[in-house]
Length: 183
Image (cartoon, rainbow, N blue to C red; front, side, top):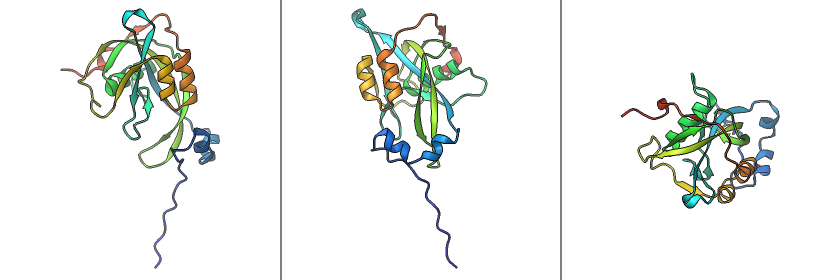
């Protein structure tokens, strides 16, 4: 008896430009199956008051530059989930704005190898605390850079635009204490 061969799913070649990656999975783009994520655009005022610095981090799998982001969390509002991701992925906390400052899209490779398009609502986080005692410490590289340098480092075109055009927005809400582990 012949063994059934598993069909391999089309997967984008991540070394290719984004448009070529998208061309490899056209059905995903037109199926209406966008997944929601929440991201944190973490910033601090540069020393000497000369503008701001933005935090970029490396992803754990591919080590490409990104901002902290993750899936919705049960019982958490979107801005709270973004603040929790900032803490878990980068060890930063501070005042988070309740309304998103923008959004971007990208292709996410899931653990099972499937690829899904995601839309990320991005929330401003004015960082007031930095710690090295966070969940993913040692799994990522963190860098505080100018908005232009942050835009140069990330791959997603819409995120590049958000970073270059970022202006600190008005009223903020303090992140809930539940975003940091006890102890």
